[in-house]
Length: 167
Image (tube, rainbow, N blue to C red):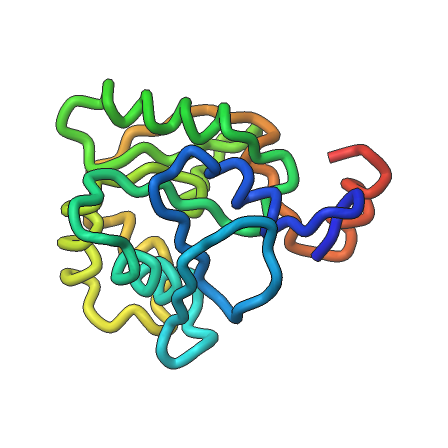
């Protein structure tokens, strides 16, 4: 999906530009920089299965993973840095989840401790078709209000509002 002549995937990749490794879960497609590709098996297993596939594709030694959905038109590097600072300050928390302007947690815009995320995924079991809330129930999470950075594009109406410059 494109917005203002740029794909939302490239917007997410650019926001994560400071990362040592960027993993994109989904079918390969042209992007603006080098990334590591992963795919959930079977394909189309939902966000939890995609998260598990992305975690498996990380190189060893990754202590923290930032998770970004590829439908966040206002995501910027500053939001990722804020999540990473918040997880450093969240003593003992397994992660920090972004909260949108309506107060709703957005688990696909978050920073998680890699080991805790791996344990939680193991507890959930087969992730294919499982709801994200199953994972969240097993983690001790802090939250961070990020406003419009957490607003996503889920419907044609959402896209039309963003195209008109009104998130």
